[in-house]
Amino acid sequence: MVNNNGFETMAKYLSGLKVDDSVSKEGLVAAASQFADKLRPELPSEPNAPLAQTYGTLRDKLQVVDKGDHIQVTFGNAFWWLFLEHGTSPKNHQGIRARNYVHNTFAANKNTIMQTMVKPVMDALKK
Image (cartoon, rainbow, N blue to C red; front, top):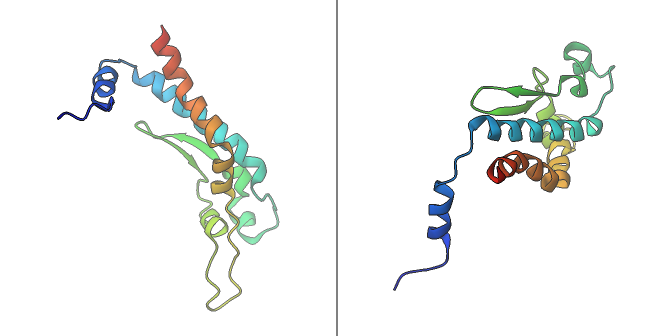
């Protein structure tokens, strides 16, 4: 007996759709920019923090980068965002409490970011 749950039919249908790479990239750039815009106000911007004095604040470093085959939302050389996001262990010092700026912002805006990503593709398919 054949498992007729619709996945094979849908896979055949989707394989026949042609979407230009520039259209899908347009959606990725728009979604990454939207995420960066939502994330920027959530980030700490204390200019007198020791690492911010050397490298700049996280708000200033946040950027969308086109790497050719993929799009990145990055903090540039502001490596310490990872310590703020995930925290540090308090073995030999007080440690840093995890603040989850990136995770919480994405979780709160996931649906609108996904809609922004898919919209150019859907518009191209309607043509």
